Image (tube, rainbow, N blue to C red; front, side, top):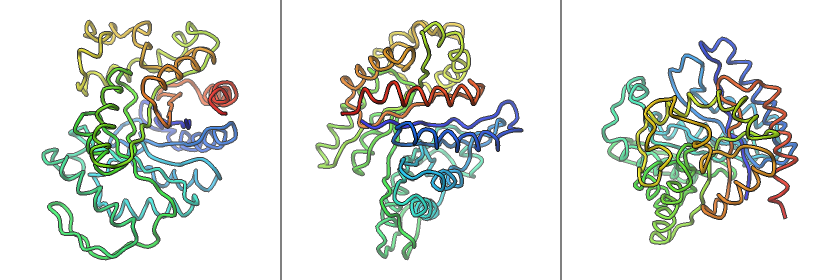
Length: 338
């Protein structure tokens, strides 16, 4: 199993120091490589006052130039918002800089204001997304293509082509994981749903891959923090995370009630307690507690890659983040190396 870090690059309330957060991310990526992580990953969102990263490719290129071994990727790039040929070219350039280390995770998009920003409607987004994936794969092949679809028309080829880039397809539904299986792509999960829900979707994904005759690979995303006790996690880390998690549950109601018992009586952020929420959802605590949680999730999910987010928008601070990355690499990852 491989280990990665997803960096949440934000500077609330108004993004005045977002450039500093980006530079801190580069230094964190360098440390992650040094202490044994296998990959570093960037997100994407738009119109966030805190400067949330709207374009991952320039920063991916900067990280590629400062690292030698780790995968560099996205979880996830919002592919339907772009011409797939432009995305294919941008990823190919970064993959050339990185020497074949790009793992491009793509997603369908959720938030209505982002579609409005791009002059698009959400209706038909699944069909647009599927066609964009098809066209991107054609472009990455390096062969001439003549694509005349419902959403995109493109004829020609791209140069340069990637050296060894992989396409990952994010999903948060039965239909979404079946799409990932159809295209034969690894599936990065979301970091929010509990392990029972992820397990349900993993079973659906693997069954669809078997039916399609494609390979299946689960990339599990989780939020995590390493400390000397769970009490320290709840006191220092959880207050930074709680509001973000509540916003997600409130705004993206895709939860399977029968598999989410800890959410049944949650109606406000105040109901969102660490005591209940960290179970089957977070990887937190001492090195020994984190190792035990990962092993349990590995047994239940059978993931090939575990990608963790340690630092959130409001903290902990950069130095604490570096220390958490260092300790995780030195005290947790070795337990999973032969």
